[in-house]
Image 1 (cartoon, helix red, strand yellow):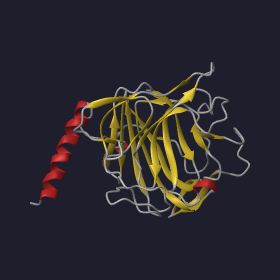
Image 2 (image 1 turned 120 degrees about the vertical axis):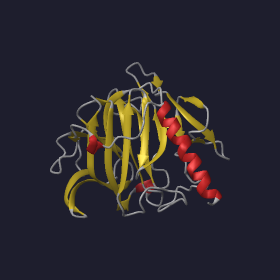
Image 3 (image 1 turned 30 degrees about the vertical axis):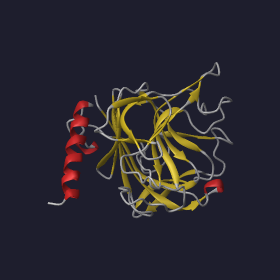
Image 4 (image 1 turned 135 degrees about the vertical axis):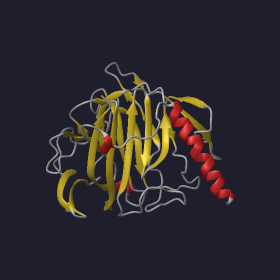
Amino acid sequence: MTQRTTCGKARAMVLLMALSICGYSAPQTAESGKEVIQLFNGKDLSGFYTWLMKTGYGDPDRVFSVVDQIDGAPAIRVSGRHWGGLVTREEFSDYHLVVELRWGLVTWGERKDRAKDSGILVHCQGPDGNTSKDFNGPWMQSIECQIIQGGVGDIILVEGYDAAGNRSGPRLTVQAGRDRDGEAVYDPAAAPGGFLRGRINWFGRDPDWRDALGYRGGRDVEGPDGQWTRVEIICKGGSITNIVNGTVVNAGTRASLTRGKITLQSEGAEIYFRRVELRLFR
């Protein structure tokens, strides 16, 4: 038995203990539920509306569309050309979200030569575009599961403005340490700490990560560029758990946001979503 194997088993035990404290005995799969809501019906985007910085609810450049087949199945295509999101018409709480995604080939603008970037925002609240004071921002106040090459599963606390012009962000408690650069990194063995803003890296994010097109870290669990990655987000009460290809990569508790809309981001890179399904815990 190598030291690497021993450390890996120890880490797994600590992780299971941490999830137990958060209220999870084991991650439930969407397939195990009594009812699965297909947010993407395989035909159209009727369960969503669009929001873009430059055009609001209009989408003249077809940033969001449905393709009949990619790898043998229909999928949502997000071109990434303009910043914004595909937003659920309904709000949700207490659920297990399962998404399958893969990168396309196209990148745009200031992110043309940078890591392909997107995200899944949960518990989106307030007016559309409230990440800017004039309500023309790309997103809403929310908690993000980051989808970026080398950083899939990072948690980002997305701040927003209210009608009075006051800026605030979601609060979240995370067991996190600090890497050599002082960045917060999820560590189920660390003491819990409160976060009001910023990013909490997933546990295996490369400390030498660079914002470069095609970047891949040595411990990445996301699929290689061009392959499908399964991302699960479990939201129950104030707890949030991010799972990437079956590995729990990040988690938090005592979230100040516990319900809201769900947004699939457009952020400079083409990306496909072929499965977007929800199981409610009720």
